[in-house]
Image (tube, rainbow, N blue to C red; front, side, top):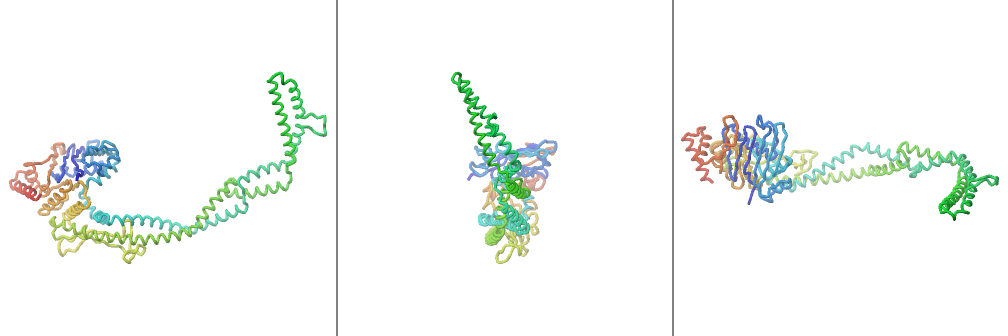
Length: 580
């Protein structure tokens, strides 16, 4: 099976490193060097390359920015290749180029396959490419939350399946409980709002306004208030148009226009222009007759009854009372009534809603109880297998009598969910408190690893956990920063042996100060400072043959040319080769 391999990193202006290239290969690579030579910068560089926090303090003094570039071989169609292609990167040839720049001012930029991408994309790629472990990761393993995550990761779908359903039910329960609390705690406010709405709707219903009624009544009131003047004006206009029957000698507009029409009709045949004007005079005559007729009808229909005016003003007063309270016009009042009726229905339905939510809440709590129990059972079963596997690995790491176990507990809470017949506290990840315990030797009590493990033991526990994970949930590359801290002698040899075993199925890069570990490496890199205290291109070299023996001698005794140390170094290399 083709897996991803970190092939090369170029590091510029990062810490003590001026400009160096770290060439890596499949299998087990050990990075060694004097204390302070910059070995840990290899881990730091890879962390930056894969989305780690950008700290401007890492930028080399006097430099404008630190730059880390990496070349990773990725299988086409794999998760890393697909995610890179989604980001617009080109990795068709199976090589993925990644770079990260951190300026001295703290700005950070990331590129994948030549394309600028958010730093978060690098972190997503890291999930599929590399597992980085350093001293801070060991401290992370001390936290119960991380221990629970490790157990869940080992358990796989057995826990992930019910836990996913549990989390969905938990979120729904939170939403239902929140809505229920809101409805019940605001009962008084809702009752007051409903009373105000009912009063307003009843007041509007008693008046029963029609859409546009206020505009119509305003026009009618204006007309009735000036009825006499309107009637007089209509009568005078009518007389002016068609004349007064009691004054046969009077001159009116209709008679004059008719005379004009007759005068033009006698000669219209002689000139089309004059004929057109005669037609227009005829139209005026017809229009005058129509207007005169309507004026006569208007005067007859005009209602000057004072009682009607009083009724109109009373109706307008009732409508204006509504308008003052509910809107600038009758149409707005009707809109308020429609919205108010809907809101009142909603408020009146809140009691029903409270009942529905209470039923759903109880059902969700029952569902959570069942799912929490399923998660606990799956965790308990996985914990037994996980602890057994880690204990077996510790036996191979010079801790033959150590025993690892998990304590899975719940905290009683009368407001919690019922699991195994008792109410317990619950959260988004279930009801379990998970703690990793270590009994380092027979007769010793199993204690939390935070209190029961030394630095060296904790390093071996972490390595054992990672080796177990490699068999169930592997990643292509593992990078360990001084996983052998606090370890020596036979334990160091066993750590080297287990790292070599892990490297059979994955790429393993280890920053180490122990020759017993470095001897098992397929490839050893030496990090050296120049006279000015920086690491340059020539400061990261691949050790082979005599050079490797000399470095192992230095690591053993601090004396590169000591014959005893050299003999021991050669013996370590021979034993490691024989073991492989």
